[in-house]
Image (cartoon, one colour):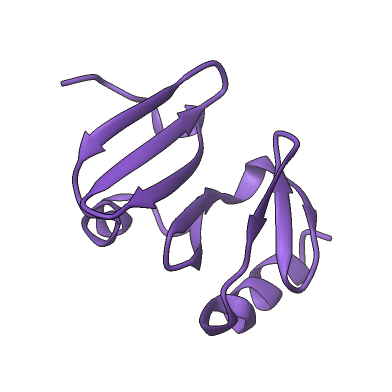
Length: 93
């Protein structure tokens, strides 16, 4: 068990039955489903952008209709999540 402050999370990536939680200086891997973790995270701070990715809204550096960038890494936006992303990031960018 590792205690993680939600403010330190950049993004969460699904690796089948595992998740990778990416922080500023390290990544943690845990056996858990991304959908379960999505329910535990605060809605106003995180958004699901792809079936394999949840991102911290305040860590997003740039946004395009098909991808976004966090900490220099491009992450894809799935077509089923585009409308939610457009609504959420239209105000920020």
